[in-house]
Image (cartoon, rainbow, N blue to C red; front, side, top):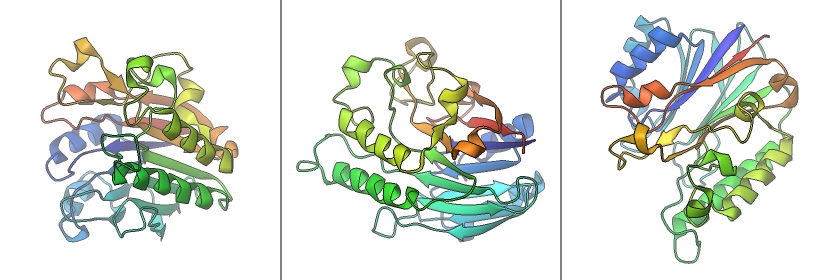
Length: 264
């Protein structure tokens, strides 16, 4: 049995206290972080090592973006794909070498896409769509047991947002983004592990805006974070859950962790 978690942490150095709490309470074997907002030289390796997470693959960038995979299981970094096509640190891929040996674990941070869902008026939206298309071309080549996790910045299902009709023209839930993500899913036959265990139309959110002061009461959430697996790997998943309580911790990220357990 191995346990893998993903979390957009929104600055790993700033939020290291709640990362330590999460690792102590949930004890995943592997944690994939997005938006670490630090270069590799200043990543808090020692803090992770003190908790037993001595293996790592860090693709950092000063002040923005960045991804990191930390693990109690030996691993090796195998890829850094530039799906943004501009040098931003938004992906790192590793292969597990201990339990789960041979699993490829892809950690990705898809661009948010700005505020206007029109590539002619908003270049960031176009960059997001192009990023997803490059991911799709990559997915066509994937072989072997692979898990891709991270902040996809798209809530594809009606039940993945607090109000489907109100958000149809809001970046992250537009039909164009959903269609583009579906092409990525079909390119490899990815199984959406979250929705394999938390069945649609059950409520399932991973992000609540900082602008919502009482996020629990208003509950205006979206499912922007995902864990998708190759079919044979998805069949080995035995559990999946969302750590919503982390959103109420001191100085939280606006995202919460997702955790999947596998019997490998």
